[in-house]
View (cartoon, rainbow, N blue to C red):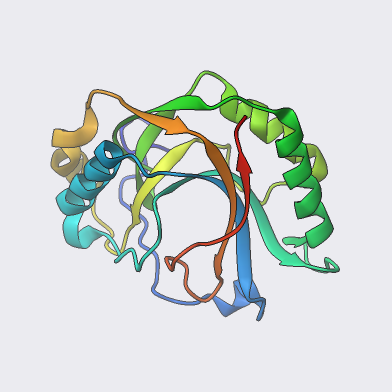
Amino acid sequence: MLLSDPLQATPTLLPSLRDEYPEWHSGRPRYALWSIPVDCPAVLQRLHEARRLLGDWLHPVQGRQAHISLFICGFPCAQPYHDDDIGTAVLQAQHSALAGLNVAPFELQLGGLNSFASAAFLGVKDDGQLDQLRQVLSPLSSEIRQVAYVPHLTVGIYRQAVSADRWRERAEPLRDCSPLTLAVRELQLVSYAARELQGPLRIEARVALA
């Protein structure tokens, strides 16, 4: 539930532990997702302002590049074994499917500060392009997802169990912002070290938009 909705939001933020979650990765080295890189200076400035506003409520980002998640893939491997593994052949098929679409560059609108229970984010709106891209990826692999897809730019994950009312009060200066335009010219398959949940992303493949 979104904290911007006082009728449905959880009463407090849900903090995350600074842990490598070994029961999750089971020794598997990297976790992969399709993403949209965010390199617009105005959007990055708003992201910085949001992090500064929420301050010590958030865990440090640890070098994670700004991005919008498009499709969560799982742990890449040659031969899938776990439910959240994804075969390298499937990733290659997804890459070919996206490249074959010949999608033209498009724009996203980045809005104000909002939040899930466990993570703050800037809202993202589009004209249906993200759904089109996801519909190409989903027949090739089940997405690793527990809740419905909400496009967003993550600001950070929480380390304090602050009340939702306090969050709304502090976030007020950035909650209703004029939209910023992000030009999307490339899709990226990225991965991160599973033991570093906020560590840097490594680009595995690119799809340039036609």
